[in-house]
Length: 252
Image (cartoon, rainbow, N blue to C red; front, side, top):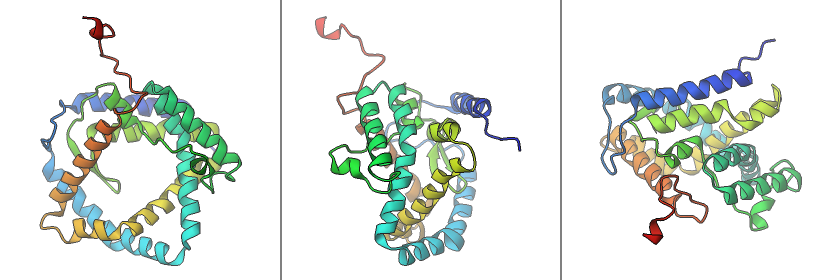
């Protein structure tokens, strides 16, 4: 059988994603909302809302009420552990070597002592997670945010974050190192954990999607605020290196 996602194909997808981002990007607008495709976005939002009503919410409720809490935590731990190599790759691309070493240590500890990530032993040892993604890598290298976009199934995003998702999917080290079908384990655990997250945050999500006067505008506002806060907060760490900073500024 021919493997669709060969390393060359994944690399091509990554480069295409970045190219598309550059084509549609606009400068960061701070607290302003750049939504030139609102009509299309609202149509996709409506489809996602219908999907949540008919599938995601019922399945997440069944998952949350039938799967014991310890098992849910184990599934979440495995999903997080399998995403850690991607975090390490992005840490290196962001020149955050301390976080790269931290995430590498977490992966090694949880993959061995933690029984393939089932138990988060690393956190108990004082090695917290430092999650990131290629969208943050693009932000780090000053790629503009671009316009707001609603993706099918995934939901709120921006052109920069959407390109980052594509690159993360294409260049995930686990997918490159582990042959199919074993490489799909991470996806299975990730989807299961997504249902668990939907269940644990049901009150907030339902209030936004079903109790707001305009669920599209409310979801857009919350996403942009949270994403921008997350990215700007990531700059406040000892590993942060500004590639455009004047190294001699303090001596002028």
